[in-house]
Image (tube, rainbow, N blue to C red; front, side, top):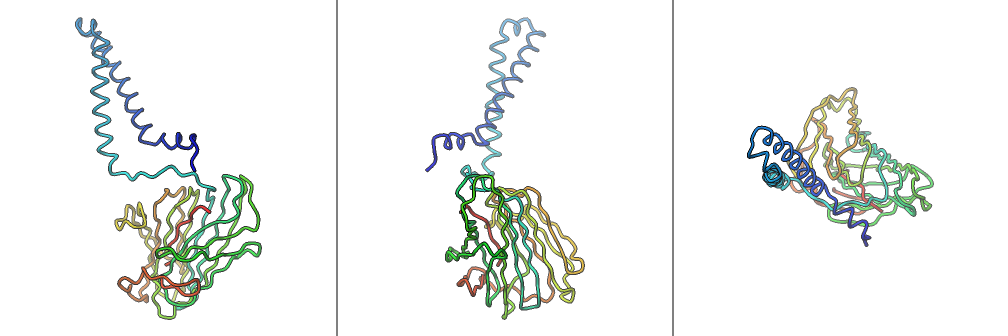
Length: 289
């Protein structure tokens, strides 16, 4: 339940602040314009206040109208109250062979309130075969929370209740076996929590012949149109993309052009399986525990 203070903070959105700034700017321009007219006209000098208010009102209405027209194309979300900030997130997709992959995530967070004891996340995979998920840190454990839509939900349990301001490192491993060769050559991350740095890398044997990777950004994982696309070389079977301060709720995707990969199966990405076997892609978004 949100407190009154939190509701008040939420009401101070970009829209409110923008409208106030437009009105302040209009008032300033109106005052300056009225004063200048007063210096050039005897009539204006006798009605400087009225002229200033009129100019202010006209400019304010025009500014608000233009902003509303522009702002309708911008998505609006409720203000977040995240339990932590992601200081760094490193995601690696490594091919051990055509049918075996190792997918890892190293995440460092800083708690923003006390009592946080777990980190909740989700994933999906386009391959078809055995999948083993484990923690790379002995003191932490992975708990499966079941399937939601196409996502497999899980938690990383720390083994203690973290106080506010605590920095916590996590390491999660997915050992993947794609016996049918259905895994598609890409991975993506949706930024659901404030994040300082996102790093994605792919490691492939040079014998695969992968020479090019593609960086993509979409304003939402469900939106098909990219707002940013750029190619990058894959040198010695290695490509890495680092994003500083990735935007909240945006989807960042790294794909690689693998001449030996099988074509995508129409509609095949939406099927999910259990914690051991799945036909869904490491595309995931961190969520609050």
